[in-house]
Amino acid sequence: MTQHSASSFWFALRRSTWPALLCAAAASAPAVQNPAHAADAAPAAAPTTATATAPQTEFGGQCAEALAEGQHVTTNCTTTWTDKDGKVYCFSNDGAKKTFLANPAENLQRARSFVAATNVESTEKAMQDFTSTDAETLVKAVIGDKVKANNGIFPFDDPLNGEHLKLSYDDVDFTRTIDGYGFFPDVKFHDPQDAKKKYLIDFWVVPEGGKLLVQETRIYKEPLKVEGNNWTTMARQPVPWWWIPASEHPGHLATKRGWEVMSAVEHDALKQSAKNNGVFKLKDDKTGKELELEFVDTHQPVRQLDDGRYFACTDFRAAGTKDQIYDIDFWVSDKDGAMNVDQIKVHKVPELKSGQWIQVPRYEWKDVGTSHVVP
Image (cartoon, rainbow, N blue to C red; front, side, top):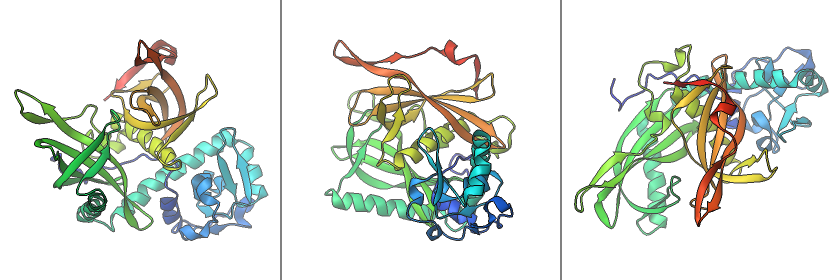
């Protein structure tokens, strides 16, 4: 199988995410039989079933207790519970809420695992309504709109160094497909001041609410100057996680691969950032301050700890800056085939030393525990 085609990859990991996809999956879910929430419950039929409060709640406004029992039930969110982290969960009635709160930690994990498994199937099914050509058409339209609005230039903010690039569009090179996760058109650009300076930018396209949307854009290859005034194009390190899969059906293996952990971490970061206009908000456990961050990338390799959880380091830039970089650690658990982010912690903070921002660690590897590299 060539790297240009990955349509047979089974992506068996997701977290509680994408309310629109949840509603789509809920349309075919059976009705809940548990009397604790049967009285006010109605099987989810369409995104419009939930009230206007749903986008501010977890699970798209679905009953958390029903999800813990393996059922999709939409609610009007009149009965809610707010966790210590400030997240709001909806219930179909007081009985469902009482049952859930008898063991909230375990029930929440069960709900997240069920949602994760459902999303794999939902996304894969939704992708059947589209082709890679559809994804390319969307990307070309998005690029065209930006170019038209910027006098023929495609603007791109480079998350790695904060640079504001002004590029000229060439063409879509090719599109990769990963079943259950989306389409990945690879697009060719060049510097309008020097056509030899070429870029390849990946667009992550996903089906949501019956249409395709661009989830993220990331530089895959960038120009590197060689002898004289010549340029070559090199893959940026680390490469985006979607370039790492290299075998058939990796999600079916008992041991998760590093790319699966990275995709779980990055999608969790993107999901939270989407709620705040691209800003990832994280409470600093040491200072109590709420940090406003912008996602850059995930470090490689990923490691697995002795307790079975996976551990990944990431870079986030302080919003509005270019060189104030935080190192944020994510702990990811694998439960019933679903990858869930269950802990996030600030590892390194930027401090100004002699006029230059450097990262100062809060703790060392030995404080995390022994581990091994995940391939």
